[in-house]
Image (tube, rainbow, N blue to C red; front, side, top):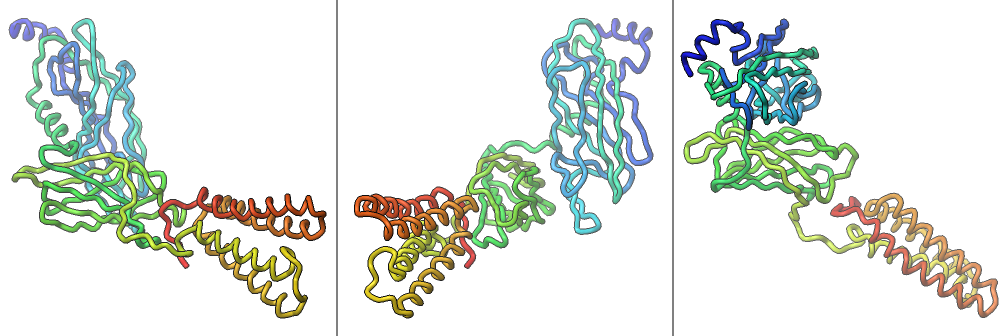
Length: 402
């Protein structure tokens, strides 16, 4: 077999036997497609790499690029499903208090594919779009081509170690005595944060946590805190809609440069997480929309009674009318508190229920006996509906700011 390969090599152009495509070059970067094989297996998993070399101070991006930019996109013209993997990233502080997540100097993005080819050759054609940045950013697009011989596997001594190192740099799920969890902490509504906890591995000197992009919030710079058996990262959250932090959500994160039993470890996880209860909930009309709506109903009924709309007034004195206006003002104040505990559509529904109570009371004073009974039932139904509507439209986990 070795003799046959040697003889065949004399009649085949050198590029066809290479384990790397030609470099696509520009002033800021170079990129090529590499495989670990002089001759690759005809079927099974085919590991490849997207190999970048970058000019000083220029960088390319991780799957969450940070405040700007976008990660590389690679599409193979003649392969089925492929997967671009992400090595452990670095954090770059940029002018204007911007931050980027990615790689500088040199990086290999591992690419996983499955092949089931006939014949002794597979032409790999990859369309690559990427952005390279320093302060300004420049987009590039190239088509990389590599003729990969197939047959009895023969590793390439130059590129196989490169691919192996790239695969080793990809973070792995927790296991082997290492666990990681996260929780949302909204004990201070004006400054929520995400708490990421790792147990079973120690942080190295430059250990960091990176969050994947999230539709509900952006993130600030993590604050690490070493513990007896691991590390906790507190990541400030910047809700994209002011005051809106989801009650439960799915979050993905990567922790880099951990150390377990003297060996380096990069860890990744994706979990559905919820809010962390840092203090017992307070039952008061500043944090309980049902109670707030109930008190609003009571004060509204009191105002209607003082104004003589629920039952005949003993007198029509100014003092009685004034007390009615005080009760009405209390109703307005309670509705203001309620606006911080329920969604806007819920607040509108509660207000409509209170207005309906007033209308029923007014009509009841001007109707016959039979109709008055029906209107009284309707009034009581509206009174009961208000707390129910508040509960249905509660903002989950929010603590009202009084």
